[in-house]
Image (cartoon, rainbow, N blue to C red; front, side):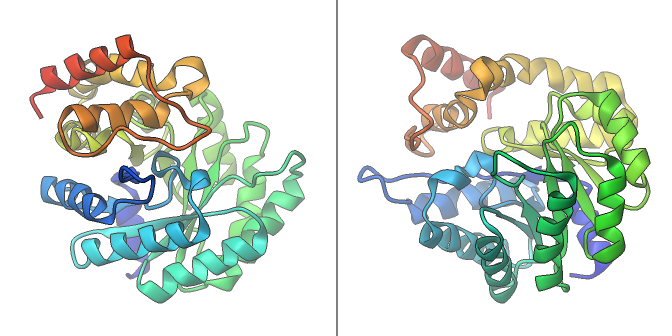
Length: 300
């Protein structure tokens, strides 16, 4: 993909597909393909295999590679693929190179998993990845409210392939400051906390948002971004209200059931099993019934 095509793909609904599991606990690649096709047929044009909704941290290295390969195959000619990578630097670099080798256009670098992350170390971590794959667009996943925007600018000075940011700090004012300190027009800003935060983040400069909801009701997600592109905030908030309870269930208890709620909704539609891997866990029966009622009301 060209630089401009990469930027355009990020300024959209950035779908985070689930990773479905078979009865024996293995990845169900047939169902995975069917779920990807369902999103593509609905009009989704950016897919992120190995995102958090895909249970990135619960997959083995071999499973993560297979998920990427399946996604690239299904997306061919229809969508851009933004591959989630992370863990230690050699593992992240190897995953980025694998993504490039199989035809993905971009990588999203998960927030470093380490109890001690310095600002300078954050830059070094991302620089090592970005410099290893100069032809790929690189998107840091920012979850640290203390990270200064100037550090992102420093990273991009060294690595011009850092083209976008998935910002997932639940504070629209902090996002507005961070984006302007880093360079508002320099990057594509993705609201990394999905539809519930998208209207607020778009008002401050975001042009794309991530989505787990898109696995279940892709047309609702696409309806929201079209409204936001037009500056029609009342229409965007109509979608926001329709999905509000679903997203509240995902966010409850520190997002303990973030993925579980999405898979429960897919199970209610007969599209995949509800199974998630530890440390995620099953949804209580009362909430399972509520999710089924919500999805039935959407008529997806």
